[in-house]
Amino acid sequence: MPEAPRFISRPPFAARMHFRFASRWFVVLVVAALAFTAVGVYVSFPRTFVLMATTTSTRDSGLLPYLLPAFTADTGIDVRYVAVGTGQALDLGRAGDVDVVMVHAPSLEKAFMAAGHGLCRIPIMFNRFVIVGPPADPAGVRDAANVTDAFNRIRSAEARFESRADSSGTHNKELRLWEALGLNPSAFGAWYERTEQGMGATLTLASERDAYTLSDDGTWYAREGSLPHLALLYDRADLLLQNQYSVIPVNPVAHPGVKSEPAVAFASWLVEARAQSLIAAFTVNGHVIFAPNADPDAVGAC
Image 1 (cartoon, rainbow, N blue to C red):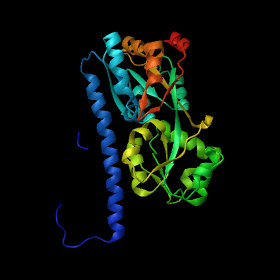
Image 2 (cartoon, one colour):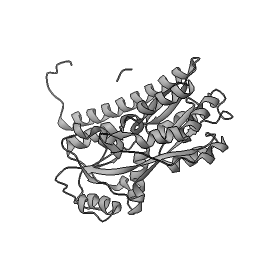
Image 3 (spheres, helix red, strand yellow):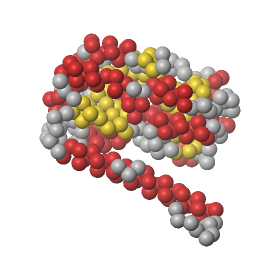
Image 4 (cartoon, rainbow, N blue to C red):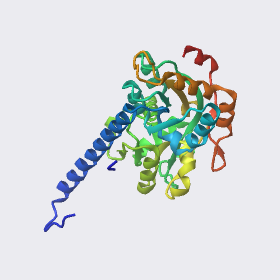
């Protein structure tokens, strides 16, 4: 997948910046189009495996490379996946391009179910969101009374903040936190930057730009060693920061081409004692990340 000539004179600064901005948007649109086209082509061929759309956090934390081989060993079913933001993962499910989704944005998941695209929605585990930022912490996030106070301090200081702005579960949670303060990011100034990228890339940009950002703890702990200009500033057992993950087999009535039976088998396996114990034992650099909280009764709806 596709991820100079020498000029006699350089264009004015404003023109160069406009070109860079337009080029960035062009690249984002091309990459998104190619990703969706690739998935469509991938599922158009006969296949024996389950295809899942999931979030970048389950990949970047290392959970999927740890968990999926155990499922295959137990069942003989191979699961392959594409890792994108939750919004994009659900879009792939809406198109019937994948058999199952594993995501973490309850409000978006409920809308997906209400529209008839999901067969059942099964909570399986949760982790936490954390706030990371410059070690010097110019906004005073370390001293915040709670997470909304932390966000309000960033806004009051107009400290640089990197938003994923990609309709992911993390972006959805960030918007809910601003909303709790009665704030709309569309009215924010230049201090609020939109990366339109996954969690790993957004953390890298935050480190390069001495900026704050919201991250899932798994991706942070997996990447912190390569982020010299970021520190963990807010990591508390705040209910607002709980990050619930669910698995949703795609509805075969709405999308007859999906592999429903093995997708349901995968969802059912995730709520069983073996998978839940594997999830509980998963660590990233010595940190336990996910708390299993499967609802076995939800499988009955499948």
